[in-house]
Image: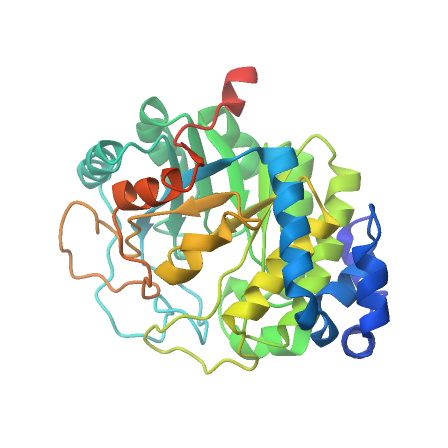
Length: 369
């Protein structure tokens, strides 16, 4: 059984109605439990839970320190290409945007490595658009061979691949793959992805299953908060996470929380999420799952990021550039989205350590393989 078989037994509107029907009594019951179910998660992400944000945050902080200690894992994205064959209504890389396109050469990649290493990073996330002819599996394999000597942990956020491709890339240094469903609402998904391979909803939905079968060390999940009702979308993310943990129990998992940010050709959000609601969501995930890593990127503001790691986030980026070659030079390449927190990695590290937390630049897991 694959996740799609479970997913097809659920009705979006029924789940949405169930979330919004939750009461204060349901929230209090969830808060008093030591082990929580998806029904409890519905209560914790419901509007009824907002008045309970303080006790949720306190419990989330306790559980996070219990599992992860007072540490924050640091990573940085490296954009290799902004070429893309898809039309996505919310992304600056979308095919319909008439912009300069670039794919980094070996020399440009190594120059990016030099700058990123000077920041102290040993964990890099490779990002591209989806252009299988120019930025396909062969390109990824070569990039990994270039990068493996320089980083202890290499993640990828690129187009979904077949299982055989992941099995080819893992021995070359691939440790983790992030693949966001964007939205679990099938009709809304089609509306936002009208052209390209990404328009295939179920191929994308099946990607974590292919990753699990390939034995990828860590899988990252998430939705683009704002494409549809964020509460319903995040319920389906939690449902997906629970299935994956039961099925591929040797794999680690992470959840990211990208909110729609300004970008050329950006669609207007259907569901606008406030900072308080994002805190609510992060706490709800932690109360549901003590083990999952929770990641907050530079999409979020300085003020938000100054506090969220004390509540539940365990992984943060810093100094991010979202254009190919953006660390080493000013190439004429469009950013995928605008960064909100523009502080340097050193400034972020100082902010974290000043609050009594340790900054972790290196992921030690590969040493145990």
